[in-house]
Image (cartoon, rainbow, N blue to C red; front, top):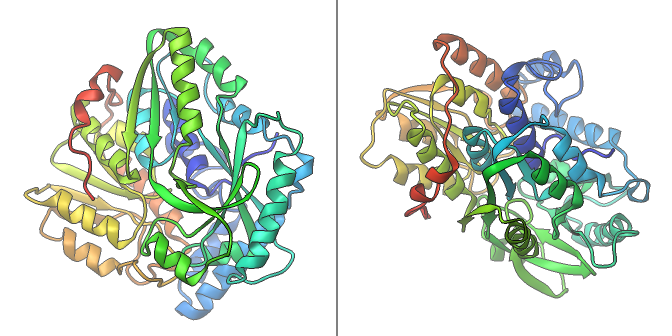
Length: 440
């Protein structure tokens, strides 16, 4: 069975929801010092690299990323994409659930699923294929390789297609990644049999099927039948600014964004399935992924979380299990960009907290639109006692130890709070929490 990339937001959403549902939380897998996206034994080396000057540190990080992606060589003709949704359902215990979530991944979705005590079935899966040549700015070579890989990946599938393939090229935020590999996201456009069977077996009578439909748009070039190329992504620059710098003479359409968007074909198929099976369906529609984070924050408060505290988590730095058992509500941010900073500023208007916990994913570059950590800290000082979970002001945004520091910080945080029953939200409470989510 092929597995998606462990560092991708969709994979992290699935794995963190599974950890919350099985109450394994921070101790699953190889343990706190052997995170899934890192090779065994990486932690001590990354901690040493953290103390190097920024230039050598970034060069070593980039080499490490290239080596790690190179280890996972994949020939697209050697796997069956239909095993990807099977991988997803295999992460969850076989038991009855009052809610099953499906659609757009992200930290907001992960928090909602954990609060609802329901599994999340993702619409997308990221794969990487080693680049034989070409640099991070060689878009033509990247597009050529992407078209070939997408065609091979979709070959042999049902003529009506169950997947679409979107190559993601972001030389600003993912520069070390696109230097080493083609990032290909396979996205469901039909409800697969493995998902149908899981829902039919797992959703209890009277339970709710919850559709997470993020419509966040982004222009994508058409490469072939069912295959596309997206240049850029959320964080710093607009789509037009990306295309001015890195553009191709190919037809393009504005479609749901590769990482956060949900294909409309899948949305309609899920709705049709719910009607046919007479399932209760709740559709949560978001224009922007950060709206899911705001809804999750409201859901935490509705479930009885501590209103006097706040955790700001970011991108793939999420662990809903900690929030469930400590009662600290999370406001998830899609990225560490200026848009997220301004969103947080608007959210904080008129609010004060006893404690504020902040984590930001390191971008490993000082690219445009990414504010320094000092700006975040200045915003949060005076809003409550500020605690950093992961980011080190001396090394951010190029801190390779940050994910390990984040997990260790969560363990210490969990140990400081008395044991309590995990927070829980009833599905029927969700629609009443969705008003005025558009903090743009």
